Amino acid sequence: MIIGLYPGTFDPITNGHLDIIERSARLFDHLVVGLAINRKKVPLFTLEERLDMLNSVMPPSSNISIDHFEDLLVNYAHKRGVTVLVRGLRAVSDFEFELQMALMNRHLDPNLETVFLMPSQKYSYLSSSTVRELASFNGDVSDLVPALVEKKLRAKFAEKNT
Ligand code: ADP
Image (cartoon, rainbow, N blue to C red; front, side):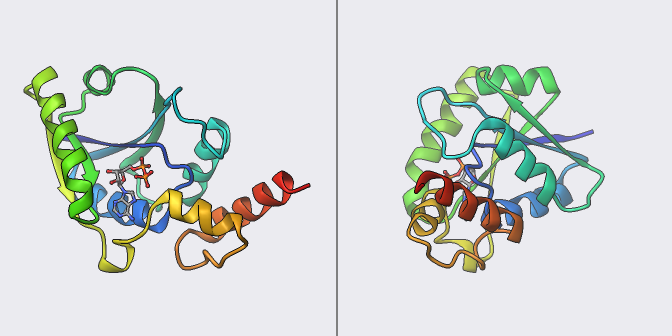
């Protein structure tokens, strides 16, 4: 039984994340989508809001579960019986940071393998931060995030601007 873990901040989840989730769910017996809590970053959406969005937009696949963690990634992976970490690679610019993380995680746990998946080309320029930026100026994000996330972004910035 191979359990994969796709960790991220998902602030908010985008079509790029969903692309990687769908590909990963086909590769592993089980996929855990793990929302990583990072106390150093101030997210736009609260943990509860991000988990709600993840739950609402997940593809109807029985081998995907959603969780959150604040532990060191390798410790959390060990606890969940995860043997493969999944990361998305968009462009060469992602590579250096991802390589460093993958090698550090391998140093901490040699049994945990990291695999990189490439999203569909149309999502290769997409990140949560560009979506947040665009939405903050009322830009059109309808091709970049699920409809529910678009709605939540609109509501969030309307609330911030009042
Ligand atoms: P971001 O990097 O957008 O802030 P996360 O921290 O949630 O997002 O990223 C989690 C993982 O998803 C990382 O491996 C990141 O490279 C990957 N990822 C994010 N956006 C995309 C995308 N559009 N296509 C492929 N992978 C992506």
